[in-house]
Length: 66
Image (cartoon, rainbow, N blue to C red; front, side, top):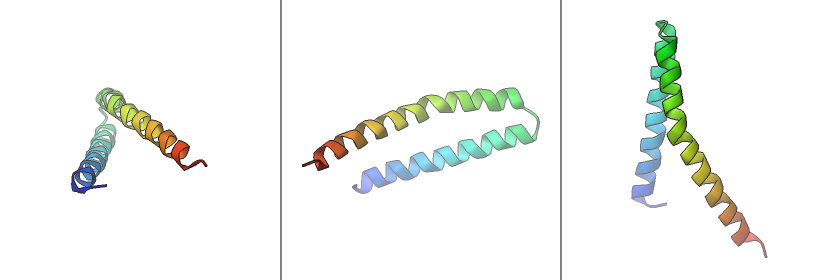
């Protein structure tokens, strides 16, 4: 993976960590509705990333077979 790919992966991980802390913070201060809303909004890009990862993983596994 090149420099741009590493940067994108690091940015994605940093964003997920910050969103996780925001959700935990909202739960601690009692804003459960906002925490659930933030979690639901986070699920849209997260599911897209998981789908692309699994799709690319299948392609790599097919190439490795003799």
